Image (cartoon, rainbow, N blue to C red; front, side, top):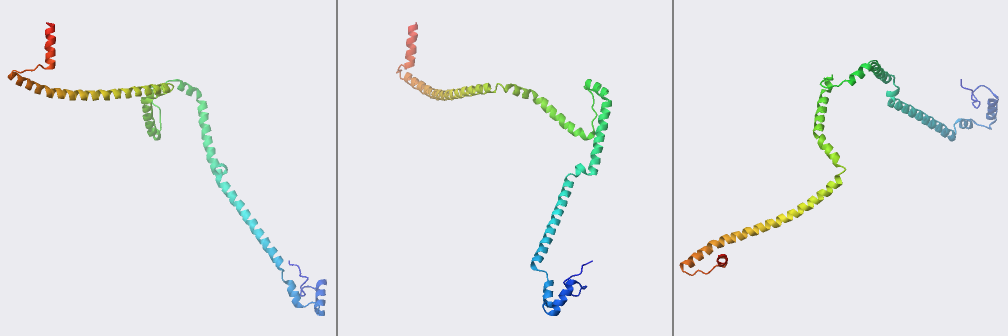
Length: 234
């Protein structure tokens, strides 16, 4: 229930009302002055606005807190949400049952592991067959390259010595290449010389026959030398 305004002359008579009536009747205070006094001062209006702004800021802060809580609940839903907890509980229960079964059959399993598994078929679900085929291909490739890989591993400690040997072998190869080039040049020169000799011999024989016909046979240098050596031998 709203309290009576003591400054309102129309309210129930009170000491303040009687005083105001007396002041109005005597002309000390007018009705206009009373109306002006009823209006709220500008400073009080600013205070009310500041109060509203602070209330709005508090409401925004509260809403932000609620949003953060909702985000946190969303991020941690797999940890604290009952649905996810039930699923995890079921998984853990299944694992627990499996471990209990293993522990119950541990003697049989130990005996089975001690036996060799040669020439036996292992049961496997159909969804894993293609992975098994791929794994077998990788195993075959690994076995084929195993000797080469082992040889590479064995040669790793001797890598520096092998590099030095390879450098020496390359140096020797360069020397052999240079000698081969020189030999090839000599062979080409010898071939050219043989061609010149082969061209000179028929011409020389032709000239010799012609001189025989004229009975003027000058002794050839190499023929006279051969004749002299023959006579000396005799």
